Image (cartoon, rainbow, N blue to C red; front, side, top):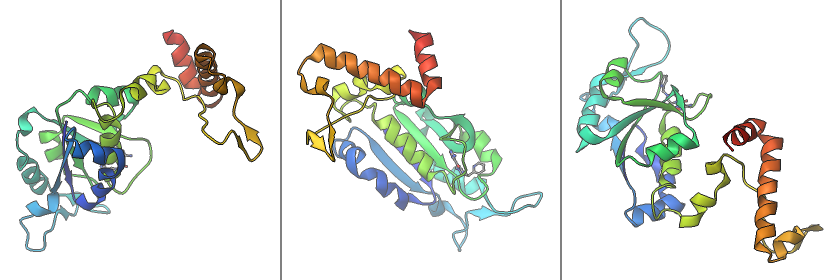
Amino acid sequence: MKFDVLTLFPEMFQAVKESVIGKAIEKELIDINLINIRDFSKDKHKKVDDTPYGGGAGMVMMPDVVYDAYCSIKDRENAKVIYLSPQGKTLNQQKVESLSKEKHIILLCGHYEGIDQRVIDEIVDEEISIGDYVLTGGELPAMVLIDSVSRYIEGVLNESSIEEESFSKGLLEYPQYTRPEEFLGRTVPDVLKSGHHQNIEKWRKEQAIKITGEKRPDLLKKFEDAE
Ligand code: 4GX
């Protein structure tokens, strides 16, 4: 899976190159190519934004600079172009899974008051939001999308972890324990030390349902309606 990222702050993406996603890049399971939009400014001061027509506060990213940055991406004809914005549909696990089937995704990160609408209309296939709150730019949302989608690429995680994940079945996770057997006077549930796999599985499912009911009754309702 190839991600091209159009951004004014390519350095921010060093964060995703750590840890699990970093390993996946080393294994060539995913490729993240960063394009600095500022490199396509025609201005001697490397200007990328201008004041909004009609007046108002803030600045708007110029369409020609963003378009030239986009046009520098090779094989862009077959890629899905996503604009991260609070105006998009909110990302969820179902959307994450469907995006993982794409071969090539181009992520457009906006700053200031956003990007001139004409270049959005020209190149963007889909607008996605990561939630109803306002950030300073689209970089963190782009990283959230890369991280969540990459987990579904074969070889990024060990096979069973995605399958076993309660969330893919629509429930929250059951609680986990590791050594020591006693911690600050708190013990590990006996069933987990019993070695009885059927009982353990049954306990975990009961816990997942109980916790989902307590913390996210909306999710439990969906789960019950599906069963
Ligand atoms: N989920 N932001 C985009 C620029 C902007 C301003 C106005 C459109 C209209 C966000 C989010 C998010 C901040 C990224 C504003 N774009 N993106 N940016 N929440 O808050 O995706």
